[in-house]
Image 1: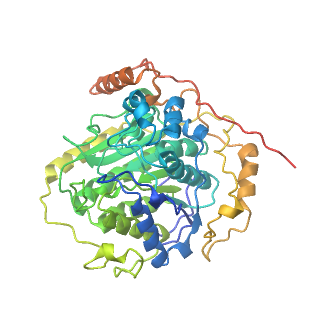
Image 2: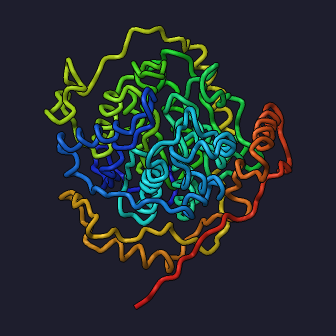
Image 3: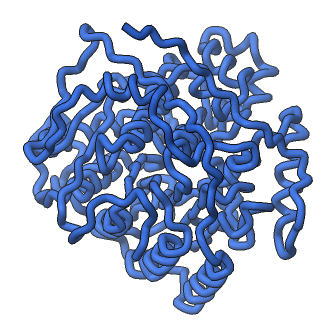
Length: 495
């Protein structure tokens, strides 16, 4: 099967990949507040498992460079980013109007270090995209990322900055087409919305639908204008198990890869779709969840793996540790090694946990109807879209880390033939590497870039999505801003 001009070397799925992993030791210190289900500590627990299973020695470990304000503003509104930068728990009571305007305060609370947290997780995802773009790895991993609900002008669903959109925008500088796949239990609404009117990004979301946050993701939501049929939504009911999930996942993704032929793939691995999640209602095993990672890996296309939801944190750590092993092609023992968070995993102290006996409300007839409908939609895409050749945009700037702040934990595996100074190479390529497929005036039209107040923005957004259901539209007259996205070009001192 042809996967485009950016595929990795072909071979059996067992072939090892060059994997790059982003981790900041401080990420586990951020705290949403007492009783809040989102716990960044789960990232630190995951890292501890990776260390004690010996997986870190098989991949290069990078501390992410924090995303700057201007990096975040490639998607997010300036005033929203400025608000996140400046608000603190001490000052929030003086900014009640802005808290309401930007949907910050309840599900998305203000906490100490909020903006640094956003910079860290976004920096890992953007950095992973840059590394993939230049072939420094085959798979990049940022378990702190994957916050798929954040919108252009507002926080949503525990998410403040949409690192996924920012990473995809980076990948689009190098690749004609980027595929986004979301296996979180919640609909990937922020990412779908951002690329709803473009044919250069296809979004595929497998999620619980029906009286469930965020309430979007109907199978009839298929994209708009140039993006029609480039949004795929797979609505699922409670209790879906491994077999039922892959009855949909594998044929749909196979058809997507055949028809869309992406140059790169972003896979959001939200672990709240696992059995027993504190907020979830699916019944996937860790192996069943990881089978999605294994399947995407088998296409030999540059792959960015991100985290996402997941609120039974011991199972989140189990899942992302196992999926890191899948990315590496390394078998991971079920018996858990002793480590600093060992007591979290009692009484069995194993990596895998059995699914429950909950009822699977997804009948085979329902699954068949969903599969046939989505495959029919994909059949209406006759071939992958082409992109006019233009001068390539510069990469996101990745300044060299301060030696005093180096975590000293960067390494390549023994199979790697990497022997160049990649930071110097990136600095050179930043300005002098010609490439096709930049963002054009009409290509990456962001549905969520409507220039309205927050109140009107919500009305227009909902109205436009409803308008696209059930009939064709010949023109794109939605009031969407189709101007090119601003790119900051820093000055470089050449010696």
